Image 1 (tube, rainbow, N blue to C red):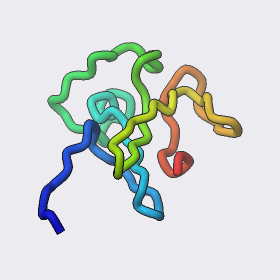
Image 2: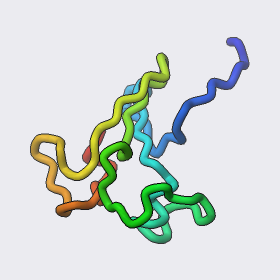
Image 3: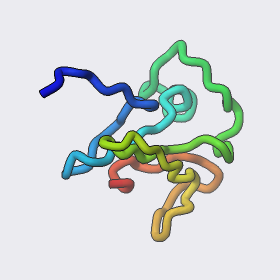
Length: 94
């Protein structure tokens, strides 16, 4: 055990059952699009744009720290999202 604490690029919302992958929304946006679930005081650089092309929900490999943009707005096969929003239940991602 190294007792070192790794630093990740994004805060993790939830971790997969096997502990290898995390899902990370942009918490700056959560306060604007899901009032009461985010962190007040963090400025949302995409305020007013419900589905910005270069921001969304991210999958983080917890070992390698590699980040994949999962693309918001219902681009996953079989996922039903509200049109033009990122209002996707996180449990559908794992």
